[in-house]
Structure formats: C-alpha cells, structure tokens
Length: 103
Image 1 (cartoon, rainbow, N blue to C red):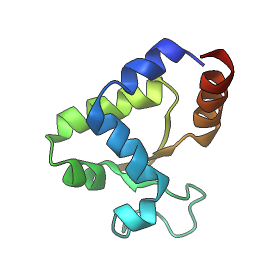
Image 2 (cartoon, rainbow, N blue to C red):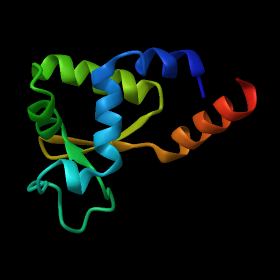
Image 3 (tube, rainbow, N blue to C red):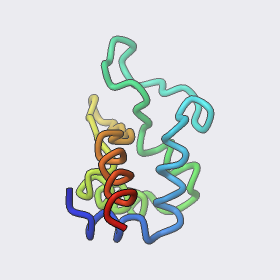
C-alpha cells in the first residue's frame, strides 16, 4: 500500500465523493444495464454512470478513476466496451488500520 498515492487520490473532493457513492452503489446509481447478470463483479458501476453523476467531462472522470485505481482504492473490470469500477475494500481497510495505528 502506497500511502502517498492514496492521500494524493483523496486530496480531491470529487474523488472522495466517488468513493462515498461507490460504498452504496445500488442507492447512488441506476441499474447497470450492460453488466452481465452472471458477473462476479458485484457493485461495479460503469464509467458513464459515474461521469453522469459527477457532471464532469468523461476524460476528467476517467483520469480520476485511473488515479484511484493506481492508488489501490478501486478495482475495475471491462465487459465489452464498458469499464466498471468498484471500491477495493481490502485497501480501504488497510488504510483505516494505517490511520488508526500510525497517525
């Protein structure tokens, strides 16, 4: 876990909001129509749905998501032409432990 990259990713209000929204994807986003019903990627949200909710340009949202993935905060999976993201709960728990025990 690279805490400096994580803290950089969390230094932007919209990126923090995205993490918050992805905590409860069913409540914050509509049905994900192109996610295969037999997918094991539960909670995955399409980039387009995230972009729509943020009201930012797709390129900006894509860069935000890539930074958050690089930091280990998100996981992604591609189905056809759509990419889905969800929280990486393991990294988030490690970060919580780090803050609790080291800060």
